[in-house]
Structure formats: structure tokens, C-alpha cells
Length: 300
Image 1 (cartoon, one colour):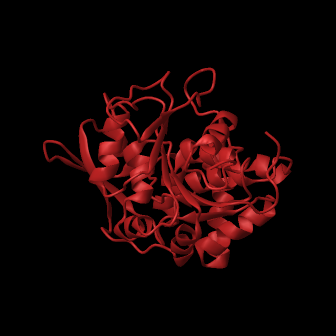
Image 2 (image 1 turned 90 degrees about the vertical axis):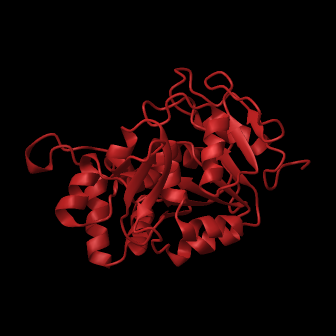
């Protein structure tokens, strides 16, 4: 697929981690008007260390989103993913430290991300889903409560998740992006710890309900153990609805995950890489552009 023409339809993508990065890599093949809305619930790895030691927003998922939208020829963009091997910085990605430093200098995370994107020649925008870091809280089917993204990720039979605070402030830029979008893409990624961690705050849920364009849910390729153990596509959609998020279409790969009972809603397409473990951005871009509801689709 050739590079998109300047401008194009406006798309907002919501989530976190490698799943959101795959969506962004796909979307940039379709339009330059891409906005990433990224969860600030991460509390593991380098992000967790920086969050606890410096009191900064966890930068890891923000870094992945920035790199996905960066100029691929930018040396600085390539350096963003490089990790230190020794000393006090061992395990930290350079991009995480850059984001944390820019946020401290700018005094505002939204401005810091805009500057980081400018430095790496990126398109679109990267925004935090909440104005401040949040703690993810999960409740299991038997009522057990666990707190923290890492803890939730390791917990089976989850019934729902929420953030602490329960109704965090959402940046105005996020609300404006959703309002102005021709479509919203949610996922793929870990259902509870990436997708719902970003999308299920009350203010953001209300904004999604007011959207003017379709909401496309890109389902994970397979259950993530133990977080979504045993869940098929319909179970993923049921959880979205439990959290008051109603997709207009669900995109999934029938070679990797079962889908029963979602006729008229779910669309199957080959979107996995050859190893079946991650989404192929090229295939995902083609599948999104082929959806009947996709804005600007030829013949739609």
C-alpha cells in the first residue's frame, strides 16, 4: 500500500502497549490525521520504576505510540527503543527517559509529547488518556479486588476493571480528538490492562457515546493468559459492553480466535503476522479500509 495523501480522514486510536502501536502503524498507511490516546496505568518494568521513583507518568506505552508514528528514517526515533544495559539506568529505554525529561521541562505531558513527536518527525498526535497517572483496579467474578496493572494482568476470571481515581480528568485534547474523529479504533491489546485501562474511564466513555463516526474494536489474536483465559471474541465484546463501550464493528482473525454469535457485528480477516502472535500492520490497514463503515471507503 502506498503512503497516504496529506491529510485524510481523522482517526483516533485508543489503548496501550504493542497492540496500540500495531494499530497506529496500520492507520498511518491510511491517513496522516491519527491521534493516539494512551493509557497511563502501567506500573511495571522501566515505566513502573520511573513512575515510583520520580512520580512521573509511565512513559513506556507513550514511547511505543510515538515510535509508531515517527519518521522511520529518524535516528532519534530508532534511539527511542534502545535500552541501557548497565549501571543505575539498566533496563530503561532511552525514549522513556526522554519523555520523562521533556515532561519535567515543559511542565505538561501533552506539550512534552507534542515536542517529542516533532523531534522524531512524527505525524498526528500522541495524547495521554488521563491527565495524571491512574491505578488500575480489577474485580474478579468472586469479588476479589486486585490493584495495579501488573497484578490485574496476572489475575484470571476478571469481571471488570476501573481506575483510581474512579473518574480521572481527561485532557481536553483527547475529548476534542474523539469529537472530531471520523472513526475511533479501540484495540488490539490486553483487554483489561490496555484497552479498558485506557477507554473505560467515565469521561472517556461518555465522549465515545457522543462520537459521530463508527467505533471499530480490533480484537486480540488469542486469549492472554491468565488475564483473558478462555475468552473468545464474543466474551471480549461482552466485557466492552459491561464497561459501557458499544462497538459498531468487531475485527478479528478467524485463524487465531473463535467467534460465535456476533453475526452482523464481527468481521473476520487475516490480520496476523506469519507467526500468529502479533498483528501485521499492512494486513490490518487493508482490513480496516475494507470495512463497510470505514470513512472515505471507495464505494461506501
